[in-house]
Amino acid sequence: MERMIRIFDTTLRDGEQSPGASMNVEEKVMVAKQLARLGVDIIEAGFAYSSPGDFEAVRRIALEVEGPTVCSLARARPEDIDRAWEALKGAPKARIHTFLSTSDIHLKHQFRMTREEAKKRAVEMVQRARSYMPDVEFSLMDASRSDQTYVYEVIEAVIAAGAGTINIPDTVGYAVPQEFGALIKGIFDKVPNAKQAVISVHCHNDLGVAVANSLAAIVNGAGQVECTINGIGERAGNTSLEEIVMGLRTRKDFYHADTGIRTEEIAKTSRLVSKITGMVVQPNKAIVGANAFAHTSGIHQDGLLKDKTTYEIMRPESIGLIESKMVMGKLSGRHAFRQRLEDLGYKLSEEELNHAFERFKKLADQKKEIFEEDLEVIVSEELAKMTERIVLKSFHVESGTNLVPTATVELHIDGQVIKESGTGDGPVDAVYRTIAAITKTKSKLLMFGVNAITGGTDAQGEVSVRVEEDGRTVSGHGADTDIIMAAARAYLNALNRLAYMASKQAEGEQKVRLI
Image 1 (cartoon, helix red, strand yellow):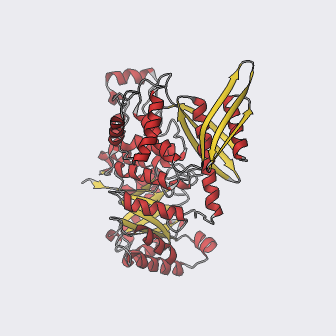
Image 2 (tube, one colour):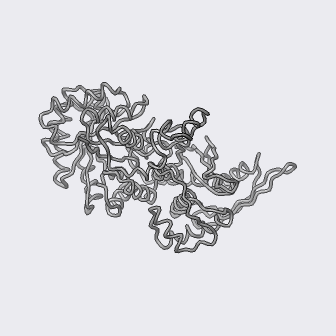
């Protein structure tokens, strides 16, 4: 009999803990709405106690996003539980996710607690959360390095206290599949009330086996997997949502399990998260990498031409890789533009639509045909602009064989227009040096990459950068048919992220790295 596995998406919480992947509230809401279209069961919208920004993101997602259960993380502390409830109250479906470590390593060195003290605290905080809502999840942080007998004791106690979901994290990516699968099996064998709760897993990818560990857990009875889009997250990342979902879907014959994910939305969701976080998906990434359905070998190509099943175990169409053939161009009107965006799942306000339509018309003058990927870039970038402090007004570049590359840049910064000129080793370098002079940034450019979004000489160029300043590392993203414009947008996107992070620190906000 086929089991349905719940997908708990933590892109907006654990995924955001990737260096440089911080998202503002509008971006989080945008991703959450796409996750709802994807069909995830639970969205971990953030950690409400950690900052006003996270509280606002959880609050808005809880009230604005329909379909999934919306969850807030909370440490096993009264103030965290109470703050999570404040952010979630009024939501049609809400969950408080609280946690405490169970490993002796953490209890001794980090929490300064005995095992009995930790178990007592866990029970009390689950009961407190249950006083607010019926859906409570408890995580045993660092469970994979904990004494198993103690793990069983804590699980039994928190289920009795009212936890409906028990999460078993491999917090530092230490476990191997056989071992982790045995841990999950042991819970069902040794914990008397284990079947009264859903057993969940949250695996990190430090040794490259997060997906394998999660699948081993499913084989041994786990009913929920906590994962992220593109596998982003703390350190080496988390279990990749798309790999879990397509692994179960493709090998139903082995796992006898599936999810409620609408797989046709996977590619779109991957692109959106990549654009907003600035984290480029590696070409050889399973399922969503640029090479995932590319075939170079002559033998493979010959087989595919005869029958696609010779070398493809999944259809590209099954994850949404279907090139749109609806022609959108410079003669397309506002109504058609709005309708096409709604077909893609984007519902914009009038102001947002006006900004996006203006960008669309400019692009349409440069390209013969606008593809779905182009529209997604327009929407994501225009929505992100609504909260930018530094906005590019104009630039002019002179460069050639016998010319020193010179750039004149005009920026709008906090209501003030500033215009300066500068030189560089090339046109992009000249623009970057001039922007740096205007903004007075001390940041260092760590990475600069360029990709084409669609085919053709009129394709939009997609630039990704990684920038570091004062110990903070952020990513930036920009796209345009003019590669220098795309580069400028990417750099400014990164500088805006640095400014956002600096303002949060100045306000005394500090994110806590968890699970």
